[in-house]
Amino acid sequence: MDIAEVWGNRWVSCTDSISKKYMQVAYRKKSLVCLAADRSTMAGLHQLIDEVGEHIAALKTHVDLVDDWSKDAWEVFCQKAKKADLLIFEDRKFADIGKITNKQMGGIYDIRSWSDLVTSHLISGPDIVDGIQKSWNDVGREGGVLLLAQMSSRGNLLDAEYTADVIAVGRDHSGVFGFIGNGSNPNDIRRLRKSAGEGKMIWTPGVNINVGDGELGQRYGSPEEAVNAGSDCIIVGSGIHKAAEPKASARAYADASWNALLNR
Ligand code: S5P
Image: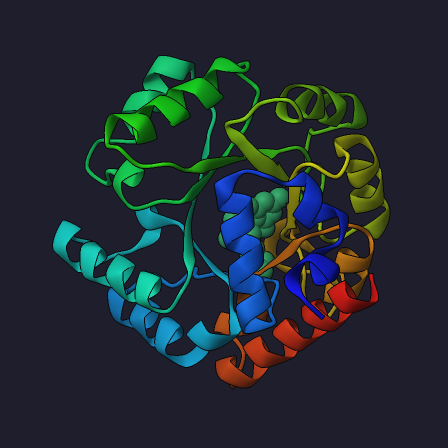
């Protein structure tokens, strides 16, 4: 099957360059997996790319949880991620007003200089997206914003009305790459896909082969069901980086997500 057949409507409707790039990487690697690389040392992060890089399409970071972070070490790490054909996604979950978020893309971590994607809440209003886009623009780079339309954690406050408001802003905004949906619940994903239409990505955390409740309020749904319901990328953290054999586990998530896409 060629790439247009594999991705179907999404290939036709998601015309922005980062969505296209993601779909191409996923197609090359036969994987719809974004690894949530939640390890707190640089060595642990390097080890992850070495072990599972070939089975994942994107790498999600929390730059502020790395104990031995330094600017130079991070640059080397990002180069390694690019060499491994990975989109780099900083899960910063911005929430401030546009002009402050614009500055937070710089600062000590200088997220604008290495990220292809970032997450943002829309709680402060639509200018946050423009603030983020301006910061990439300032350094001559392009990137995409994933808006949190739903969350996977128990008791979160993103109700259906809030989700609808986020979609209303995001679906027509060229700076918005797509939405974060609740990977732990296929019905939530189906609803999100229905109102988001075909023209935006939906990426879903809260995915694990062992479904059910996780640590500290996290919840998990299955990789196949998430993709069947309309997710374009499963965000998997502990299912891979805490597995006894991360490589075999990454492979299993890649196969599950890819086969589900082929069936979809
Ligand atoms: O609603 C959300 C949104 C995100 S981005 N729920 C989440 O769990 N996440 C992120 O996905 C979270 O920050 C973490 O990095 C990852 C899930 O990790 P896991 O170990 O539970 O798979």
